[in-house]
Length: 272
Length: 200
Image (cartoon, rainbow over all chains, first blue to last red; front, side, top):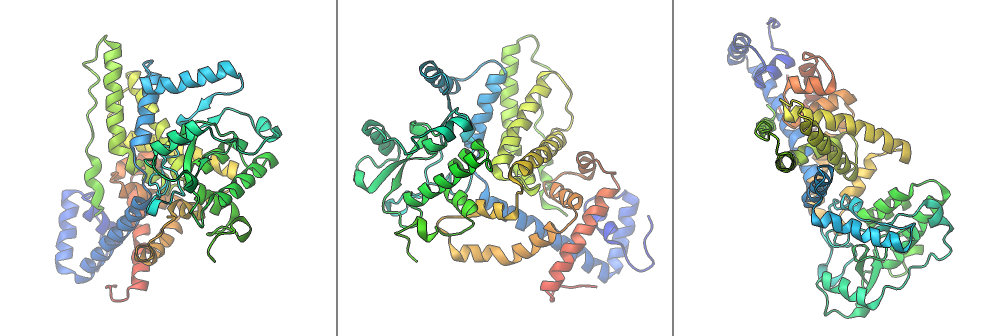
């Protein structure tokens, strides 16, 4: 091993610290370090750089890390499918889609893809502070869409959300544990709007609080219009638009309107 | 020097005892792959994220990685170093995915990361506590050449030099040189903002 007359190189210090030197070279480095304060100080600086990087990297990611239950379940279902032994839960999705296909050949429910959208720090953690729900619980509402083409979505003349049947609304309330709440306090909303191919399915419905003053239904409507315009204008893929809105509609709003707060024209009730 | 090198523990894959009972064997194989998913999801997802993939894209890549692992093992192919294999496949699939996403959406910027990090009910104190030092350091890391950055992130996930060289298709000797460059830059940035820290 070559060492400079006076000091060890950073590479030598790193290799020694990582146990990547031969025994002989490691002994030489140790002997030098015993005698050289400057090299010991440098070794400490490098170790500090490692510590700072590892902590920053981990802390930043830990804040974002979504729970693994959804992706794990999806993997198990896919593995079972590959192995030719689908579990009951996975089958049920496709049985459901099969019945729809029989009724209307162009449609099939696809929800598994949206299991992948159960990740962002907000989406897996429903915001129900003080009874205000402005982000759906991704475990209950991962999103579900009809397999419709962009053309079908964009040529549809009826883009207003269809009223959700009262029985389905009750199911949504029960699922969210607010069965006894005032029905006027919430609007049972589509996570992926039918105007973007969203399905009328309990996995795509959630109780959006009417008392939400900032991220309210009016703001979400504006996002839905924007995404539909982009999809039909050809600047955004339909699947991507569905995934964005199902993953975290607030983040999607910020992204597509380039703002951290709802624009004034989208929110009459926003506190300014 | 990197504190997470203890992650190098591998889950042994017992593929020899399965014999002709293919359904039983496959069920066991699925369990083993799922166990590996539990063990490696977080470091792999963090690495994919460091490549610039969003978390949703990273999750999708991971599904592909572990399905590939299952198929690899199901075909009876050898696998001596699971961790290195997983990171190599994740790296390759992640880069392909990133290319596709960039083509489709023009860019995947740091702002996208920030979008994902947005909390609708932010705690200002907590955000402030995270922000300044971390931003400075991550800015230094972001400014590193891409290969150096990948090398640094892989090492931070506990991969040894030989594994990193294999994944990034670089020579063994180039790995410590790359890491040294990166750490020296981080240390310089630390010196600049913390003059009380020693220097020579």
